[in-house]
Length: 172
Image 1 (cartoon, rainbow, N blue to C red):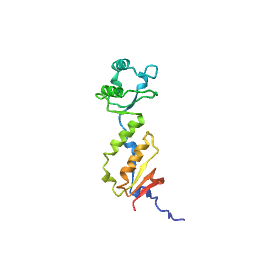
Image 2 (cartoon, rainbow, N blue to C red):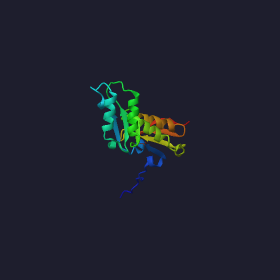
Image 3 (cartoon, helix red, strand yellow):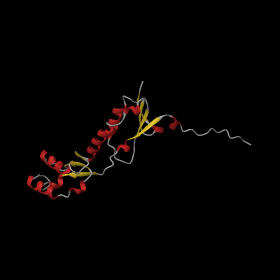
Image 4 (cartoon, rainbow, N blue to C red):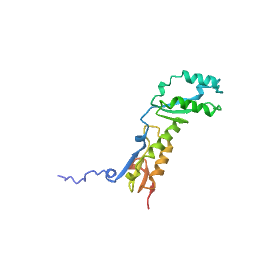
């Protein structure tokens, strides 16, 4: 009869002290809506002030309530700067956030503001893996920003999964 000489399985990743930081945890919890000025242009090219003002007064703004709004123009048209301001006048009382640019720009601004509030002391002298490949569209700028913030405090910084991370930085 053979004795069982197998050693118990050890989860070396769990015992390594590596902290996994998932940027999806900082993804906005509010709905994001794109506001495209293009639909207000005459013949898809020209913004006529009188028509634009009328269209904005007739717009049902309720759909933007408590939402994050990316304001942009998908047409190759010259949009006067006052048009963006006028849209902001309507959105400011109801929208959770307003950003001039694409949805990716809105997410970049959100991550920049949100990551700036992280308590970096929690990561001091720690081994950190910034998780990648998730379900949500975290912009590349968020990965750049978290690396910029963590590099001065972290013992090491990696990207991916703890079991197969790409090394980025190691304090000497």
